[in-house]
Length: 136
Image 1: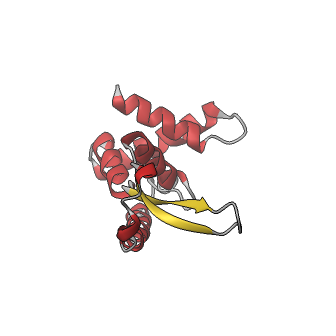
Image 2: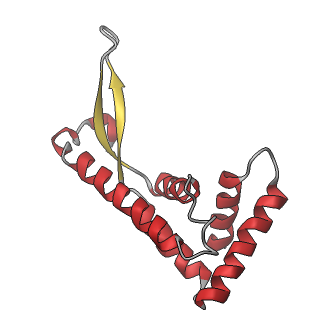
């Protein structure tokens, strides 16, 4: 049941101009090609890729009303938001789902994981601001 919801969420994020049937065909054909080439379970690999790209901390902007300046504070994400952000990173260009049929999907996954790790390190460096009450 969880796998169906993840795949349907992924299709809805990838869909352009209401062409859901075309998006489903593209996604499932790339899954089939990937499984034929690698002989690995696509559901397990999909979950591993999602776990690698799922952030656990992000920043929120807080603006002052007096001078319209803002500061960014680290914010720990809830589980649902983490999944959505991980799926967004899978679907964004360059999309890992588009290059599953080729051998370049590992390179794209590694690049996206490195970007996520770098961003997480930068956010965690601001951890002295993490204890603000309105974010908990």
